[in-house]
Image (cartoon, rainbow, N blue to C red; front, side, top):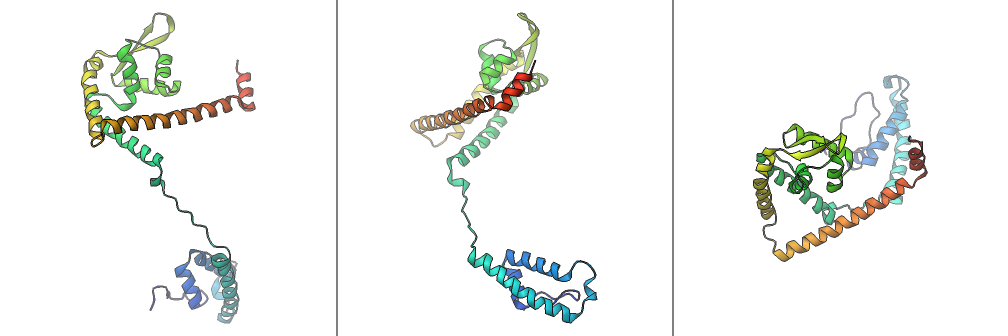
Length: 246
């Protein structure tokens, strides 16, 4: 007996071989069968109150309706199946490479107490002894809340420290701790080694070309982001909200 030859329950109408085939072969057939059977049962009372003859009579009509609707679905209105292959786009591989690099670099920085999210701050504070949160946000090209969260984690982990700003009584300056400055050269060397491992097999010319192409992608995305930001700032809703602020 075929796999689709299911046994009939006593409280259900007998299923013809057409219904069995549609139920096994087509998702649309399954949905239509369930809908037809639900309508046939009435959902108003127990199915055992209906006679077997009533079941067979309504079932023959239901099968005709079912076949008609199924032909309309399968033949008259064919499903449009569009192939979607994300791996065929460069953006997919850029994203995958970015995530892999992040994990790889984080593993190399972890022994020194650093993380890749610290990198913009480490780079900025390695040149200037101390900077304000606003200056660090501008240097890292991130929003103030994002920088505030990053600095809070760095201070908590002992990577950075806050000190009063002599030029602003209410502000603070952020600087690296003595331990972080001592570990920074070794962490920088570990990053360069990890970069060499990731670029294995690529010539200097290929690496230069890769940097150039990725730089162009970044420029495109930043241009789009700036355009969207100008659109939001110029919208009536944003103007009304900004005007209502004290």
